[in-house]
Image (cartoon, helix red, strand yellow):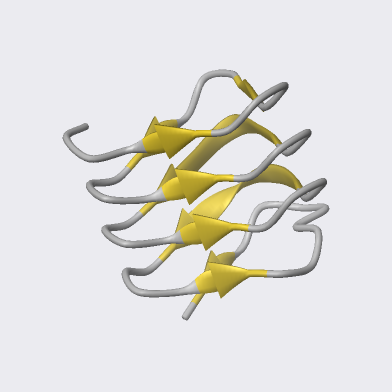
Length: 69
């Protein structure tokens, strides 16, 4: 979507990245992870599915699908 920033060596598979979101270096986002608007995934984070609501910063791994509020 518009304004998305994907940093070097990040991997995104079968996921949706919301407007103005960032995926950090060496981060891996997969298995139908859905990031809302203005979500920032820090460097080297793994997300294995789930939904992240808008305006959040993800600093820890998401190992199983869940909703991050």
